[in-house]
Image (cartoon, rainbow, N blue to C red; front, side, top):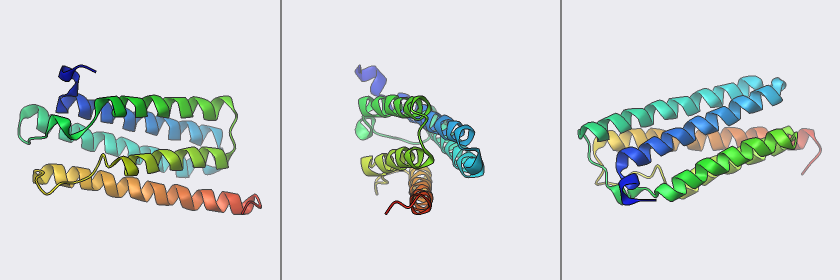
Length: 161
């Protein structure tokens, strides 16, 4: 990745694309698992809400109303994560994955976002950045918990400990 691609607007745009990819995966899950479609559609809608929050941040950074350091995010990691989401979406479809497998993959994706610290808020951040990244962090934590709860229920229903 070139340095010109590591500017905050480009990084945020790549993060927006990842949120869109995750949403598409959840929509795909809603189609593959119609009994759970309300669950998957609700989370997919939240992912598009994440997209809109990042779009808001993108516009603020692009206009210069908030400052964000270019080294805060790693473009290669963001792009790699997007490719991973696409691979996992294809895997669910190609393998005719079970609901448990789809939930496992989804839980892994949400956990990866949390562990990466991509939404971490720093004390030096502008208030607008703190607000948006804080919402993203909280919503991702909620997704992880909701998916894990559904995963545990599916496993129990299938007689898996």
